[in-house]
Image (tube, rainbow, N blue to C red; front, top):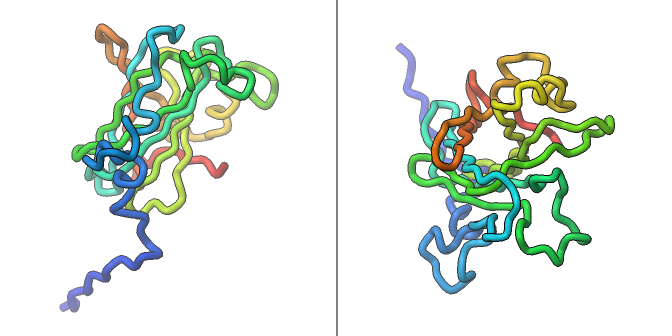
Length: 203
């Protein structure tokens, strides 16, 4: 008969939480007076040009349980394929960056626009995509990944990054399915571990 294995407590060096929401999205954590609204909470203004979309998903751990204290940041080009930068600082219509906390079900949601294609390292256009950065309790170094759009199959098939992932099943972990609604919704779940683990990048 095997002896029961004692459950060891986490040490401070093994966890980054549970203060992720408190530090990064204080209003969501019901701490008022730090910012009028949490930084990155809104990506759009009435003057933002481009097709309105919603990007959402769940962050789940290796057991499939929702991660309710994650924060997801999204970086993207605008509808013409241009990133925000010093030359565009006078243009407040779209910053190309957002930050959203996950709720108790591990769900995050961004209201944004469909990005245009940007040049890849080889000079050819990459498929429209957004970059995601994920932190949570126990994730001390933010995880970098991308979200591609299922209705861009032709562009995805030649994308400079996607084609570097040899296994089509692993490549599929980056493709968000499209759900029709008044505002199209693209859904991608982020699996931190396990058989369906999302592809993360060392950047």
